[in-house]
Image (cartoon, one colour):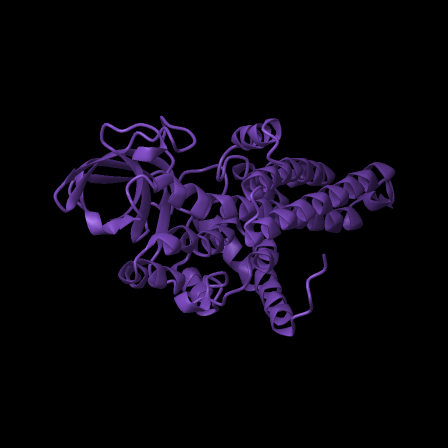
Length: 383
């Protein structure tokens, strides 16, 4: 279904596209050269309003509908992965917090996050746990204080964030009934250890953390929702729409890979002919185009299902990420192949695109997990 023309939105989309192609590329090179995100980049994204696109106006955001916001995420994803990550995370974590917070909590946690004044890191993944219900990080309640014990890993922005939106379970509990979500301040709390684990294959510049807690005290009023609602906050509130957003980021990055492949094919000559004239290269480009368009259509369908509150929105969320990730793998591989040996050198942008693409295969859950979600829905007739 074609979206109605909105001149304000079209102007914003054009503005973002120009920024990504211009200043965004300059920042991308600086990130690759230094291995870190410049402090002024965060400030520029905040000041331009790019960190508050999706949140409702009552929280200080622009209130752009989810499916339309994804059209902007598609553009940001053509840029450096760390730029995309900042925009993606900050435009998404409010979804987990807002429905479950009191008015006082919203003013304390959500509004500063939407404004880009405070950074919240989504803190669920553990080295010894899988999909959430098997969380091993625990809290023990004593009066108005929870004492936190356990370990988290692969926590994006876990080093530099202001708050960890953290999933844990009540000590001695099992299953989802014992889970809870809690806001833990990254302020050097007793028993909290932060290990910088940012040396990654791709997505350079974004910090990642291993977090260890030993009887770390956290006030009970920092809990998000009720005890037993942890997975509802963390999975339904954030991961469901976030998977669709990651799927769209696959589309955007694939479009960038295709763009680079076309540009190279049109200038590279072998035996007196541009390689763009060769049928093998044309087939690669045609297959990439069809792959990208098919994935994009499914991602937008999943986005609309989430907007409408459709009962199978979670299934489409997993399916869209599953399809988009596989598409990105194929597209970036062909795009690199079109570059030949040149594409393997860091001086060519396709090298970074190829590295960054690999991270999407486990961000917000591996494809193996997505297939389990979809298969269960298919077998129970829920789709």
